[in-house]
View 1 (cartoon, rainbow, N blue to C red):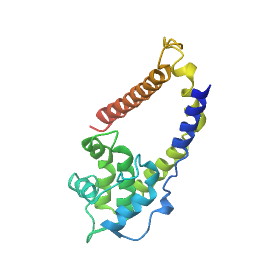
View 2: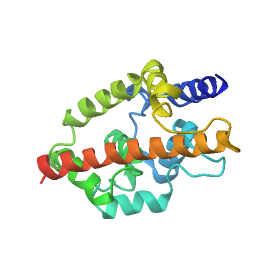
View 3: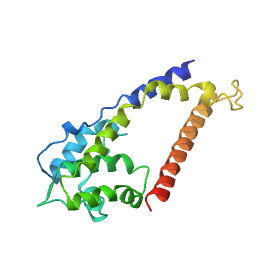
Length: 193
């Protein structure tokens, strides 16, 4: 049962991530360097490698050009910008920039006309709740040998059985991720266009 124990440990690691509460986001406007430092500090646990960058100046400029959020005011980014950047960070590996733009457009359009709109705060606060509600036990249930590999025909006496199981495990989660990504895209295509 070493395999299950290792999976449970991994599940605990990926679900035991901190969230950035609305109250953690500064109420003062920040310059670009301060924004990248804030994001780097608050989201560092999402890095896969120690040299990975969470957010660069180029990324922020590209997001501004793509109209994913309103332009900064006098080169300063407000709390709304930071909330949007955090959401964009979580979406960028799943959705295209165009899809993110479609998703966020109702919010960003409203912010252009009313910078004090509470819509983004409501969305962001509930986004944090969603992050917190991912339970280890739910992941553990889908991580069991019986559920994932039990239906497969793997000869346990074969050479490199652990490598085969690990490859299949990565493929399993890739298929789940792809399916969930396609579902998110389908919702965007049917509800936002």
